Amino acid sequence: MEKQEFIKLAEKYADGRCTPEERHIVETFFDKFQEKKTEWEWSEDEERRLRMLARIRNRIHGDGDNRRVVGNKMRWYRITGIAASLVLFIGVALYYNSSLGETYREEMAMRGEKKEITLEDGTIVYLNAESSIRYPRHFSGTREITLKGEAFFEVAKDPKRPFIVKSGDVETRVLGTSFNINAYSGKQVRISVNTGKVQVTDTRAEGKKAFLKRNQQVLFREGTGELEVSGTDAEKYRAWTDNVIVMENNTLREVADILERWYDVEIVFVDKGLENKIITGKYKTNDIREVLESIKFLKQVEYDFTAPGKIQIRNMSNQQKPKPM
Image (cartoon, rainbow, N blue to C red):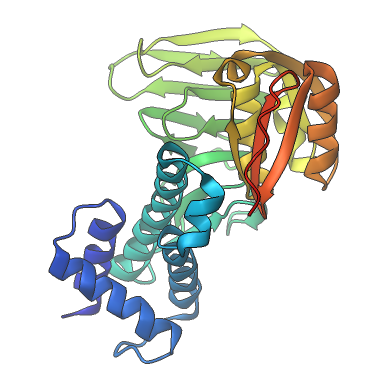
């Protein structure tokens, strides 16, 4: 089997489409990779991605203790689904880098980390947790990149070469400006402008465009396909680049999604009704407990660490404690 054939197979593995024989091939590879006995040579970047794949694969196929901590099948499926999505996230990046050679680069920030990237034209990209960008090593006629997740851009001015960001079905085009794009998979796309002007296009509908200036935003909802323009304080959407969490009429489920990405944890609501409670606040801390303590006070909830990196949130009136490990 050639190296690129294996990478495609790893992608099938992450997506749950492997036959038992194919699954055995991938599992055997990861065992050999961790023992440094693979037959192919890997670049430094490929090795880094494969180490991440191996780590997440071990997390998916953890021992019985993991299942005991979880306590129910639905919780286990949630962990498996998240971990598998990360495997696919890394595997696709690995495939792109291997198949396209030196033509393209892909940078990614895993859960619990953020990155600052400077492109060859001087543009600075701040990459939020669980996000990635793919871009050519050398820009030619246009400066075009692909974004998954969230990033803040400080675009270097170049009137002859537009800067284009593709995020799903939305294309953002500028010449020189600063703006934030939030385009996590399965969510609406939100683009907010801090400086300059931005053109946003729905690539599925010819002629459907929105033009934004400073302190304006556009929401693209996949269900309706509408581009909704409104005024906003754009600074709050870039606050994450300064490690500030801004909650403004967010549901606790939305806040939990942010905390999961930022702190590399898994959060489950024992009382499902809590997920829709609304909260507003602003936090700058490296300690997730400080955020949880504030949520506890504001929303009259309790939280428990059931295992390292695993958190349960419940109503104060719910006396059901997590089972001891």
